[in-house]
Picture 1 (cartoon, rainbow, N blue to C red):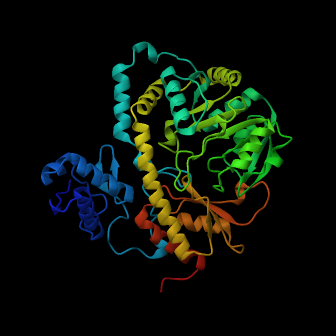
Picture 2: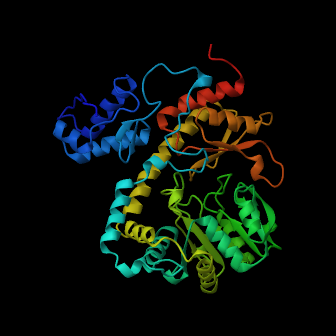
Length: 451
């Protein structure tokens, strides 16, 4: 554990900012090297004679910026690639993403998972939940979580929902699969483009897919007519990032068919007012699917289906026949996390962090690669890039990954051919690395050297 020399001015105000600035300077100057473990917040607070909360705030800021990382068993350590040593040549430089596994553009920053608060929720559950609650439970989910989800979705997403209409599932993928299984084979309209990882799931569930084009206002409602149901991501369409317009929301409700609403990226909005879910407008004809995968972590495998009474009961029965329901301890922990405000606090923190990272990436793309049109920036964890006609989108995505920018080409997500494009995620790209990463990408795409 490193001893730190940190000079602070007691009369200067902003002590947390002063501590963060001193640590940031030490890392950039190479006095704190990658992997060095910092003192605990309690120890450093004692050394500096400040409150522990001030040190925690400074550490959290530097974790958010990508200078530090916090790991159970290791404490707070200096991140790789955060130091001030001479960088490697452009083509040999290591990726500059915030630490975490995988390169999917839709992945959240898992280093920000609220480990201490989640552990506290688990401890509370183990200390308070009666023994009988650990037995096989209702396959629809534990009552406490269904109540908390109903309250949360009503308050935050303007949903019209009662606990008995909620079924707890292992994420949106399972929720959609169960719902389609209950509905039986049908003609299902889907957005074009859409997530190519979702298509096999939909087809395996018996759906006959009807691709419908998406434009700047969302899905083309005229193309939905003739289908039995439609699946869409109205809050922040994947992959284009557009929000379903009010006029099309109205026309879609008037259409009269069943709507499967994937509430994708609804938690993270930056430059627009909140948009309520479609389910709140027509609860008798809309199935709302959501999860905590983007807000907290995909590995928790916790999500929900909100459906009309008969369909909710069918999904509940299907869940019971499939695997008897989700793990109960995690359900009770999430209920406690929602009830005590931990979930709301975590979301507010992550909105601020992701907005800064989005701003940094979008600014650098506009400055260094102005030939790219950046779209869908108002919400979510990704942006859609419209590439110049002569660019190879597969090469672009590969080169972006090589410099630490999570990216995927658009072609595999299309049913019909279209202009070159890519999906780029910013959740794991630290603010202070954005300029360097985009500069490296520009060099790779131009074929020029740095000399």
